[in-house]
View 1 (cartoon, rainbow, N blue to C red):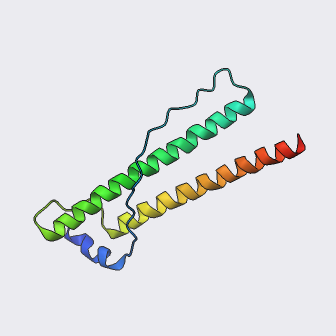
View 2 (cartoon, rainbow, N blue to C red):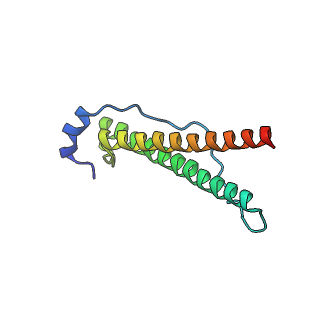
View 3 (cartoon, rainbow, N blue to C red):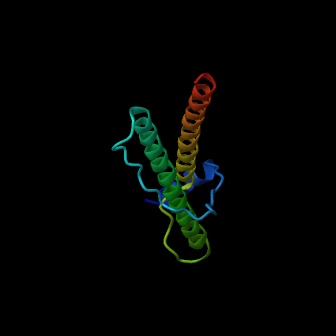
Length: 120
């Protein structure tokens, strides 16, 4: 995927490299059987949120690995990276937007719970 035709694109795109530092433990899905309808909706939300977090972490690891390939290719005859700077930037923005949307959903869930607690 990376070839000399990407060199111009690399020069025109800026990006801030993201390096994951925390250890990640994969999630197990919350099973909805036997739960009340509100608890089932919460379980579905938690499963979706976990998928977003897990996918984002995997993408961050892939980008980090590809960035290491890019740095190595600059210094010796190592294989070229798969992503150019524009691709990396787009994937980093995808991670940011995904986490931002997830954060908004979490805030809505918290507001709903807080409101129910005050009125219930």
